[in-house]
Image (tube, rainbow, N blue to C red; front, side):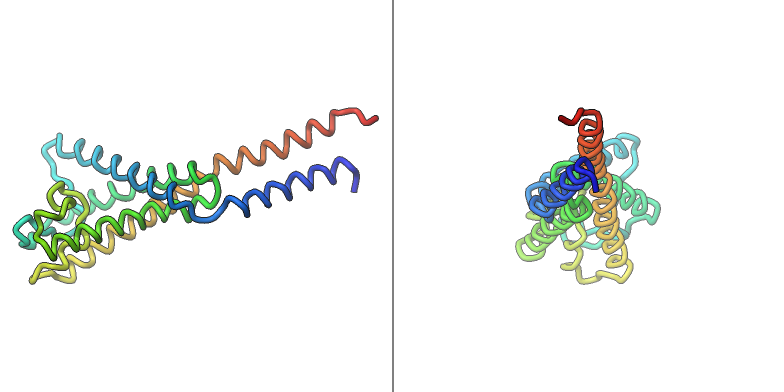
Length: 202
């Protein structure tokens, strides 16, 4: 192995060392990715409602009085697709911010969101639905329907579909977000290889 090859190999090892040092779950990136996804979800909901259509995120929803109401299947499917798109964007943002392990941090975006939904759902069950901000703002309220007496398997299936969409969207978005930094790292190694190849030896 030549000296130039050794230097390039050393640079590649250094990049791996940096990845090991700064990789893994980044809680802040996941949290900010969650807020990004939430903003996109609100924006998509506003666009759809501007066209005189409602955006639902499950097959049943709980109103502010705690009553379980039926939701049209088409509306629920559109809502789930909106969740998928919103968390793809949020996961992409988390992957870009975290730099490494985009898939993990993209899913972290969805996990943060599920935690927040669960907290507000619990507040709605224990204190009344008026304390559940997600029910009041027509946002995903996957855990709030647990408190309804007439909850159905269809309601549970719809909620699970929304959760899976959030996790899948975050995972895919995080992978795409990380690809930018993968290309940047590869370009750095390639530039080092090119520079050392064109630098005359003394």
